[in-house]
Image (cartoon, rainbow, N blue to C red; front, top):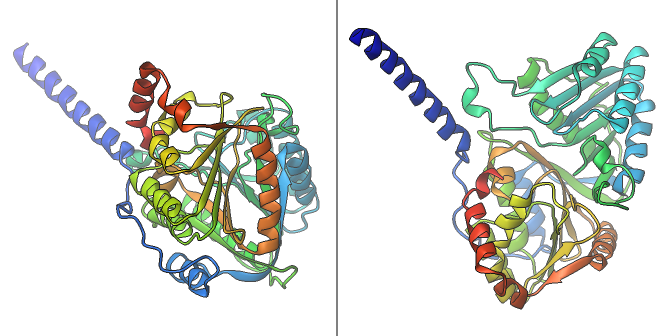
Length: 425
């Protein structure tokens, strides 16, 4: 009996050790993060800025693109579905959220119809976020749609369970691309006209940069399937169709996750006049706070829109508020969007540089998730995004320093406690 107890104890101890090891590995933020505030060496208008973004971050900015902002589900979903239904050769779709429901059914129907007409359709769903029911997935596969899961748990990747693909990418015929903050779910339907319909922006892209978007899809499709998608059907020659210079920028743990953090820090540290940040999940670390404070000291106007009471994860609002004090004291303007959940992820710097995509302003996006952002360098495009930002601002409530300092001590304590878990929110 003592021997059996000893063996049982050893087995339990070994299991506990394995569990704790896996837990630590999954909660780790991976690659070493940038821990020093960047010094301003040039402005966004300086050619050195775009040179740096192309050389250090890469790929290079491509001229000749046309990027169109689509506001809320009433504009976003019809445009995406129209592109899918017009596909002749290929469709590649990678998304964190693909849920069953009315709009989910419409996408499934459109993908199945195209596959039935010989279009090669590839769908990459996050293992956690892609919550389509089994019947819908089976239906797609039965009709020729290739459906794969990103980072499905296996014995040899349990240490990476916390790594999710948060990217939102749709590329049709290698010529038309979509990216932004929107998943495929009924919560994004409508026109942000009620708390049940979220506020978000997505983008339709044509031109040479769509090739970079396709490369971003292949970046995750290849390890998930072992298959390399290439050739004219996926990567056609793309002539110039517009005036926007743009680049598609990706990051992933083990493959330069700190690069997304560097993108934001370089953009902020290069600002000379204004930073407008739409941030559905705004939980800045010390380096980001210090970089924003340095911009404020240079006289840069910093305006940030975050969700208000309509938020899918209240703990995020608490963790975010814990970081507002220094920013408010330095003159940052923080506004809470009132009508519904605010899921926009757009940064506009000096009315010239715009970054849009899947990335949240938090440690999870900067270090743990696979993310993808489209960066556009164009004053006319930036003006349009400022118009949309100002419209959101008019529906937001500004939080004052006095209000923040007057919060009950119990709220401040809960905010502080939530901030301790900020890397996982």
